[in-house]
Length: 168
Image 1 (tube, rainbow, N blue to C red):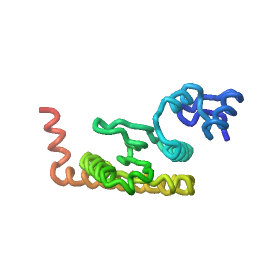
Image 2 (cartoon, one colour; image 1 turned 90 degrees about the vertical axis):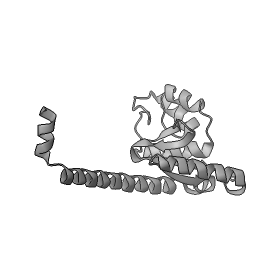
Image 3 (cartoon, rainbow, N blue to C red; image 1 turned 120 degrees about the vertical axis):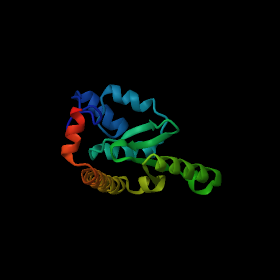
Image 4 (spheres, helix red, strand yellow; image 1 turned 45 degrees about the horizontal axis):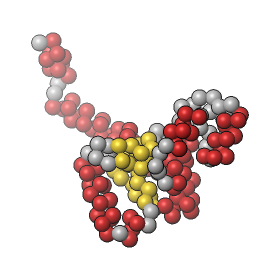
């Protein structure tokens, strides 16, 4: 394992590297150790977040979207990841609140993945790999949709007409 922070890629002295592995399970610089300590997130969310970061996923922890705080957000792929405890399954008010949050995120173009704590505790690495694959598929699909939109615009407007428009 290379001795650099998984968040900022800065070099870590051996004592910081060893402390971080022992206390966080991943290499973090002191600034990012403090950043993580100040978050009010569950151990399962942190475990999944770190597994995704180790795979190179540009995930953001506790991202506020203007309406709510997302456990883990991958903005470039328009994917929100919510890590759910048992209360999300057995409490009807919590389940309805979750559905509403998912709906409002969907209206903004985001997909919400709901991952139960039990899955993370059982096999975080396989869970992270499937999310990684999901994100790659999502990114490819977004790219293809953007290309189709571009083709539609090219069919509607002649490129020469647009060039003339720019010079007017």
